[in-house]
Image 1: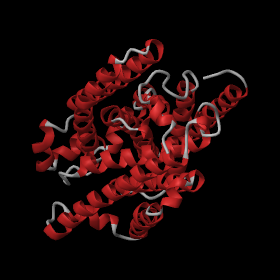
Image 2: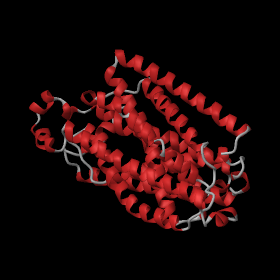
Image 3: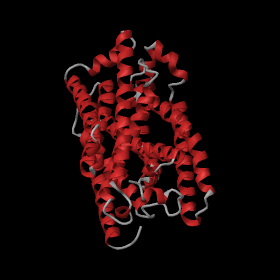
Image 4: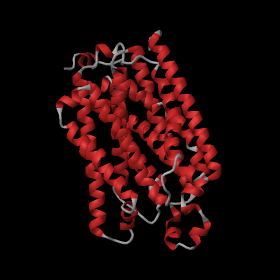
Length: 386
């Protein structure tokens, strides 16, 4: 990125994010002394939200390399910067490892002793194997992010046209690897919070949720960067329309998968599966479910039907930001009832803390490179798109 006034703005924003993140996490840590279980619950939700955006950046970046299209060129640097936050997310996973016994009942010997079902599942749900799988997930994600960024930088430097083929080949296999690892990670990190319950579509729910949150994040960031060169000379209403269409597709896919899981479990009405929904339809959680239905699906669905809204960067960014907020609310609804906890002030502070550190790392990576790929053969197509 060129030096000057924009560089100074990014530096100030990076310092602000870092300061806010450190302060918010420090306050949460102090709260954890009096309520240890609450701290780990709040931290888990915050962690899932931000690592979901980082992993979604990996997935959408590979999707763009695999399919091409002018829509992806203008957001490639945003996606690449998101992928490079994965080492930070690996470091931020350490507090979760310290709280395994607070979060996961299957790690407690006294619970296992009185539960034959958990003893049967112990071949998979045990701490050493859990940590081994977690290390494998991060190794796979690091490898994908490393080569996606390494070859993109090499393409900027050399203009070698064969690099596009390498990126495409990696992305085909990488999307399969991403699907498997995110599915198993969602089972390990979230579904095993309630180890008696299971859903075969659960991994897809997280995969689509990550893609939806990432697309919303990318639209919001592109709107903020759209008045800076060279994006101001490249990004058009057609680009935002294409991104809005993708966001619309992910909203519909998320709703379809969520409703499919609900319909199958509710129709089956088995005592192993139905309590998961009963807990989330009791008390105030029912109102939260209705809020998710309205603002995570119904209203965005109606708004994104409009071509005018999808082509208006400010209105589209407002819809995207609202969807980001609802993604966080959806994660609360998925996680917290299973831990038998209530909403607490740390549930608001933890996402701000983790997000501050994540945002600082994202900006640091974004400002190190040009905002557009320099030698991609499709850059001319993206420049004249629309």
